[in-house]
Length: 367
Image (tube, rainbow, N blue to C red; front, side, top):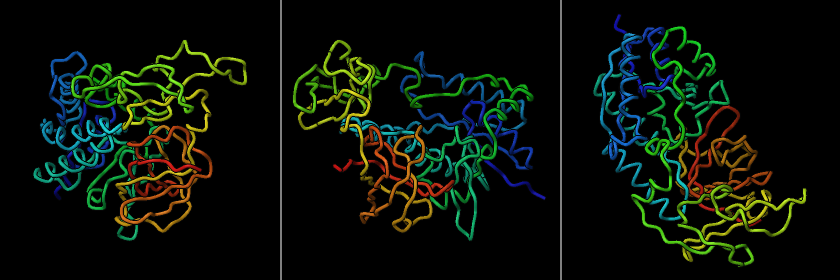
């Protein structure tokens, strides 16, 4: 009997490495695929591609799977990085991981895997897929602290029908234990953080290479100038550190301390950064959110109903009412005000453990 063939994305990290072993244990024929998505500065001290490839190849040897490297740098630059720059130029704060999953890991990667005769593709994401009544559902991972369904909400029925998430039923601690027991060469490797093509490099220096910026005024909601910003793209809503207003003093908080400053608005038309004092300033709180470019896992939006949503990844699910605005836009009305809702980030909707889909936050509405 011929084994089903699975092409697994192997990044050199511990998660996809253990996923390779799990799939073999389940009886699949496993082929590892290492994706090279960035090559502008391969020799840079912040770029780990070379070491990641060595780690992935070493693991493949230990686990006993074939592995090949494929270069998607051109597709990545056209489909992900160009959009990333456009969003920053427009004053928004994009989430390239969402776009990378939709355009590279589950599109370019899937196409390549099918050319290799794959029956399925697999990744080391923490999520689950369930088939029910002929429909494929995207579910949260069992380990809710590692769940990555937020980044996968744009996946379609055809993509999910071919996708396996071997880690979805396991906790991260179990993955580390398996890696130790197998004596994988990367068992103690740190999880990668931050934007994939930026890595640990200074963000401001990186953006300076691709975009031009103009300093402008930093104002309070009342219109008082309290400083100068170095370029709107360097700031995100809710940001506290790195604003440069530590010496500015105004009102005190309830403890009698000088309330910290936060970024509350970016006015691209006037090149103005609006800052406020206090974590719970009204300008940082929103109950009404409009999202566009909506994508639904089922292919069609659910009826207007009470659901839960996240407006950023590391956030607890918040109860909200979905109001479809027609077309590919939706309005989310939250029971409790959400903090620093940021245009360009993703609003992702859930019904219990089921990820229904989501869209890109466009703006908030005044209460």
